[in-house]
Image 1 (cartoon, rainbow, N blue to C red):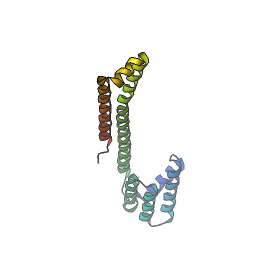
Image 2 (cartoon, rainbow, N blue to C red):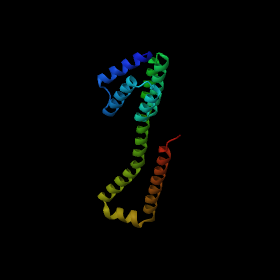
Image 3 (cartoon, rainbow, N blue to C red):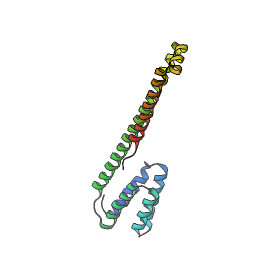
Image 4 (cartoon, rainbow, N blue to C red):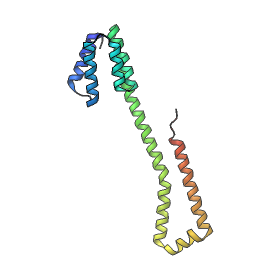
Length: 164
């Protein structure tokens, strides 16, 4: 895609295909209209990137500005932009899965402690109550389990922090 005419033709085709989500479709239609009507392409592209409100829109606007003003071919740059957007989406998806795994790992010890106690109380309620509530060894075991669970929560919070 190079030159002012080719950019406008590509935008027109994209709008006619109606492949974009509703709000984005309207913004691209407005961009196409403004580029055809007004002669201030820079202002139109600035308004477009502010309407989208994402850094990728700024990059796209910069590419369009270069193509509109200088007539340079931006097809390779658009492919790189799309590849970068896909890579960012995949990285974000992987980060979400990592955080989900950390959250699951945080609650697993608590679940197993509850399951362990429920099975013990179900099998023999009287001796389990005597051991876990009256006996110092049972209370110490529950206290150690709760301390370890608290430590795992703290570790989960530490691991789930976003590193900038």
